[in-house]
Image (cartoon, rainbow, N blue to C red; front, side, top):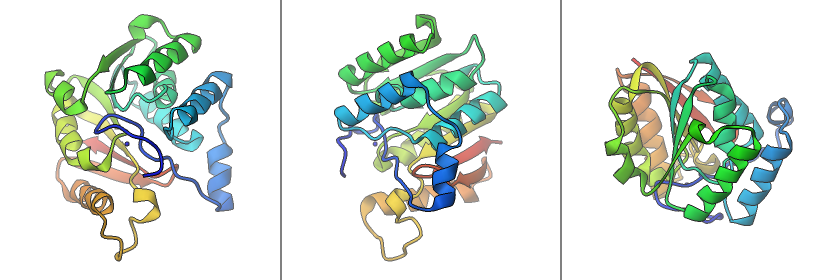
Length: 224
């Protein structure tokens, strides 16, 4: 999850930005409190791009709409997206969040605590997502959020299909491929991977998808 430093299949994907007035209004529609602003500032300090406020609000909405109790997040970062997800989840919900960077997770742990979430509300796992995901239970999760390098999208989507219950939601961050998704001349590896993933989900009988135009693009899909 280039301009910002990232880690393979386990860190924050580029959040993107827009000068479109409508997009700017959408991004500022839900404001962030001091804890989220702090987490966002810390993300910049360590060279990560956190999800935008608009994308965060969408994550909270999806978690709340699904009454999510068990969520997997691939890419802990400094806790920005995790706080948004936790704020939409049930009061007894648990967020399982995976990242390879111990220092980032240390920051996120403090952010979660400052947000008022008890330690038992999060399960913070350090490691490569592709090593951790096979150890998680089949059909046990309500939402899987992927905020990782595009190179890991295919494997993460396959894992999400196994992990999610029917009616559970997959969310991929970075679905606009840095603004290149609609440019047929863009043939770099990341863009091609994102393009193929978006197409495969759209054409799959296992998913009911929608592309949400917030942040760097959220592809949300309900597991059939």
